[in-house]
Amino acid sequence: MRRIESATIFPDGALVTPAADVDIDTGQWELLFTNLPNELDATSLRVSGIASSDLAIESVATRVRTTKTETPSPWNNCRRRLRQARRARFASPVG
Image 1 (cartoon, rainbow, N blue to C red):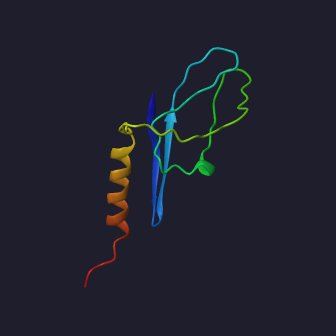
Image 2 (cartoon, helix red, strand yellow):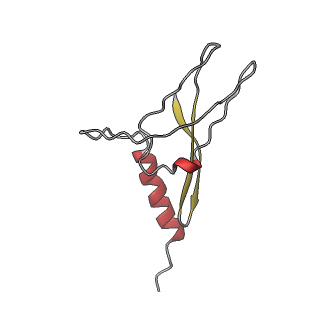
């Protein structure tokens, strides 16, 4: 299950930290997270994990997959709220 762990608003953008809980058995696995924002900066992507035994994250890769029909991202509402909050917080006073 994905969720927003934290969000920080800056004048020029926002830092959103999503989290996902994944239970997997021992072995080598490839995890795929879909419907991430198109605006995702691939260089800012970080992955970490907690395990009851040794854990090695060998690589992290990103790719943009285009589709003929736009699938609504679960992050759209969060991004909209962050944009509104950023505008409200950093708006210049009128007058």
